[in-house]
Length: 399
Image (tube, rainbow, N blue to C red; front, side):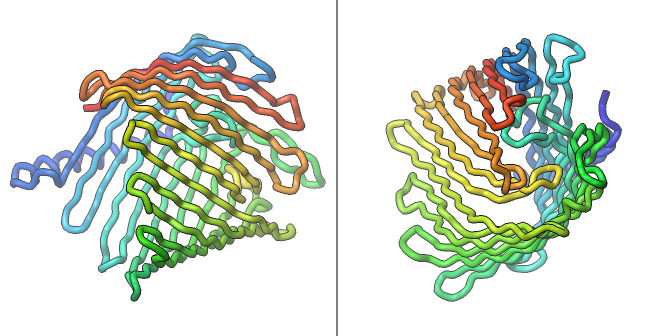
């Protein structure tokens, strides 16, 4: 059964999409092709999963399927850009009442307007599924919750002397989620399981970034950011988040992209001591002429999760891809992530995994992919440790 909030949002965006279809057709008739585009697609996947509920050890397995219809729309006219991304994400396993069988809806709409040279205003509304628990698979219904984020962005960009650039931005957002079960603190201490918890919050954000050239095809940057989040159901999780980072972006080689940065972040919760942590990030992408390419990512982040707990995250990921001609590719990737919830805890959770995927472009429209993935979790509290193996055969159709 479709959620009422999802139905309302999806109906609104579909109505808007219908107007854009009519506008795009009219402009095409007037000799303005290209101002309107629409791209339908569909993904059908057959899944074999040996632990769909993330149970301790191996757990119970089940075969299932995943269906993802999608329609992307874009329209431009006189400095105004409109877009929509509509679809559904349907998960169904062999037992009809299985908790991993669920459906989610995707209704993203946005409008962006150039107000003046370098000044842009963007409004967006995104009804999408969102990962419930950090570290667990982000593409499975057992770890998804339906959410909606309404956001207003104002950005100003300006080129300074000596090829320097400055960008300033402000953001206001409201986020809501459907209900889910969560442990919440009680007055006087202890926790109780709330089966009707909503991760709703208001958020405001300001940032400034200065970029300057330091070498050929290489730029350095300094970015400062401050945000405040107010949670509707848990005022103790209201917090101020401040970060300052410096880094370098480079494509000094034609097929190499590098982004390296480091800095500090501070989280300030109501009634608690401020928490200061180091931040670091490395993103490296390199492509060789022989069809090989690699991606290396390493992050050390200090952030807040869906329900308002501060999380210290350290992660590393590497992926290698080999292309065989223009139609076939094989990709192998592995990752490891360490989470510390409440950041001071001596009981970290560690997640890791590996995936191998074979893709084949059958025609311009059809693509088939076969993948195997292993995912595991280890922590001090062994009761929620799990191991999961999953095989997916997926057919993609893109018109």
